[in-house]
Length: 375
Image 1: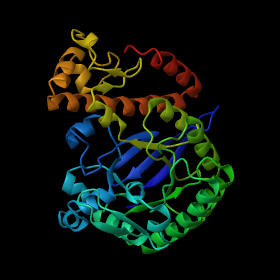
Image 2: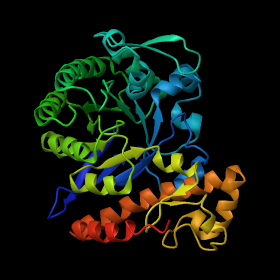
Image 3: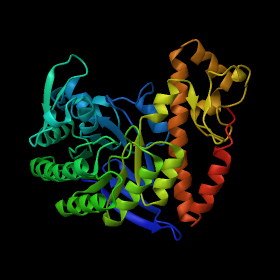
């Protein structure tokens, strides 16, 4: 069945809201953080370990799965859930972010029909259209498919963004028209950079197309300021339906998640927790730490004494530092488990703060602790 969103409560002092998403795999409360499994795997950890982190929806990437192993292989396996052995809801992004980063000549390679670009694997010239992106996602059989949108750089001019928004809306209509998987939800994407009028226009026109949920895109680009990110949220949220999911794409810093929730966002995703884990870094209640540092050589305490994850229950900073500095794979695995659980636990605490009508107090207390880095 298609996902259904139910609004349970709005926090009294902010736009934060508590909701529940009904899926074939059960019901999941929001706000929620969604781990990213780009190539049908959360890097370094098993699906069972992902579930133990209390994950709900997870993500995979259309572009990467299109190239390897191919949507037909996954379809023949019985769909993405069976292929990767994840018995929970899966969202596939459209591939747009990757495609636009690979399109070198924006004026030449981005056409009304679609986008020309070269494969990052072998340099082969490829062409992706809204219809093709949706067709791939239909075959992957994810629970949520994303519209194919243009992802302009943070440095794009107002005029460029205006034309880009218009094209994204036209592509959204084409994508919805070609969507054939009746059990798969399809989300539209709002663009427009940091400009209030473009965000309003993009949101209103995208909502007119009538999607199953809505995403705020263009907020995780290199070079974008926090101020512009928060503007993009503030300028989009008022025009999105109250009875459908609101998704902020590519955001995973703890303080940004809190700010997003306060502004009315329901779900978040980011590769950050596993990416920083591979470099020996970890989120903690008192800020981010780098276990490569010599000061942790004899730190015989959990990564975060306040954390309830498998890693913190069983291993010390000292041991994990040893794994990281000797380049043992287990080190990245243990930190990935911890970092994913940290962000999921953060959204669990935010949900409780909304229930208690105390989210601003929660934010203040979190920042007071989090900015006291022990590193």
